[in-house]
Each structure stands twice: as structure tokens, then as C-alpha cells.
Length: 253
Ligand SMILES: Cc1cc2nc3c(=O)[nH]c(=O)nc-3n(C[C@H](O)[C@H](O)[C@H](O)COP(=O)(O)O)c2cc1C
Image (spheres, rainbow, N blue to C red):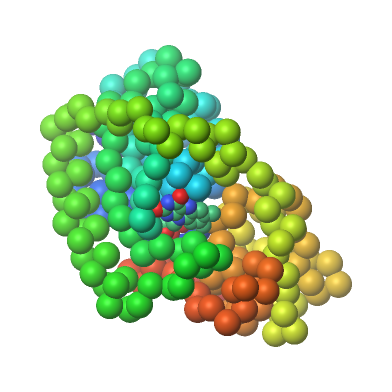
């Protein structure tokens, strides 16, 4: 059966997982949720739909929540979800299950894969060794998840005590008000291309944030000059992009 793997990513971890799943599944096609722009009609011909996404604040990125609420087709036989996370996936998968249930569909299978933590606002960038180890173990886990999916296994997330976080997780799109630019910003405008949701434009050679932010941190981690910071506490921190994927915008910047 044809499988559509729909992913959202800021720094490549979820794309890494989506690609590994596609490698191990027969007839799977990748779709970037941000590029679908809310139009789920290209997925109509697929019998199996998968969602691969990062955990944000123990919950779902807003864009993934909206996407999950947008599709409900007669032809879908099996829906699966794989969350990538740094340390604690919290309520993300059971929250997704409930979101999908509202459309009249059922989440049949859910799994989580630990990846390098890209929440550099609070944590340091993982070491090269740690990144290598996490990617290697994710590779193995994806093989197992793909076998489960191929066999239409049912594995449903149970209710999580983290459900309380639903009331605030990922909800604040104005979190971009804290982004600042250091003097290193040369006005190149690459951040405009790096933002998956079109939240950045340039004015007088300086990025403007339009308060529709997912906080995916793509602009922060991938600015060629490391000029974008989240307040001042990230200024001396490193940056992270999964080294084993090629993000589409890599060709453009
Ligand atoms: C805004 C934000 C919130 C995050 N919250 C969590 C969290 O609650 N629990 C966790 O384990 N990881 C958290 N992370 C880490 C990411 O889920 C993890 O690194 C993920 O694999 C990143 O995926 P990506 O590279 O596809 O964007 C957070 C990252 C960001 C940017």
C-alpha cells in the first residue's frame, strides 16, 4: 500500500527519521508539512499516512496539530506517528491521538525516537560523539518501526500525565519577539529562506519576525553568521543541524 510520510523539521532530526523510515518501507513518499501549506489533498491517493515531527514543550508543534486536524479521507487504512525528541516526549503522541480522533480517524501506531536535543535556548548543543551515537541508534530504531508499520502493528499511546502541558505547549506564536540580531548580521536574508513557515521577511537589511513562529529554531541554528540569538543567553552557544541529512534549503543558501 502506498505510504505518505509527512514530516515537519527545524534542524533535520525529523527529516533524518522520515528518510530512514522511507528507506525501510515499500513505496513511501516524503511530504514536507510546511510545504503542503494546509492542503492535504495531495495525500488522497495514499492508504497509509505517517506523521514525523519534533516534540515541543512536551507536546506538538502548532503546525503539526493543525495538519493532524486537516485530513480525513475515506481511503486511509492506517495512520502512524513518530515523534523525535531530546529527553522527554511528554504528551506529544497521546495529544496527537486525540487530535486525529477529532477528525473521525484513528491513530493506529505511535513511536518515539530520541535524537540530539536542538533546544539550545536551555541546553548545550550535543557533542559530535553524542550526535553520532544518537543517529546510529535512531537508524536501528527506524528499522524496527518500519517493520512494525509494514505489519500494520497497532501500538497506541496511552494517556500521559503530561496532558496538563497541552494548555500551554507550543501555543505562543509570539515567542519570536525574543529573537535578536547581533552585529554579525550582514543582511544576507538567508533566514527568510530558512524559516519553514514564512515567518521572516527583510526590512532595511534586517530580519523582521511576524509572530507566526513555530520556534523550530531553524533560523537560529542555521544562520551562516550565527547572528540570530534568542535573547542574550544563546550568544556564546553552538549551533546544531543534523549532519546526516541534506535540508532542501541547503541548496539555496
Ligand atoms: C521549541 C522546542 C521545544 C522542545 N521541547 C522538547 C521537549 O519538551 N522534550 C524533548 O525531549 N525535546 C524537546 N525539544 C527537542 C526536539 O524535540 C528534538 O531535538 C527534535 O528531534 C528536533 O527535531 P528537528 O531537528 O526535526 O527540528 C524541543 C525543541 C524545540 C526547538
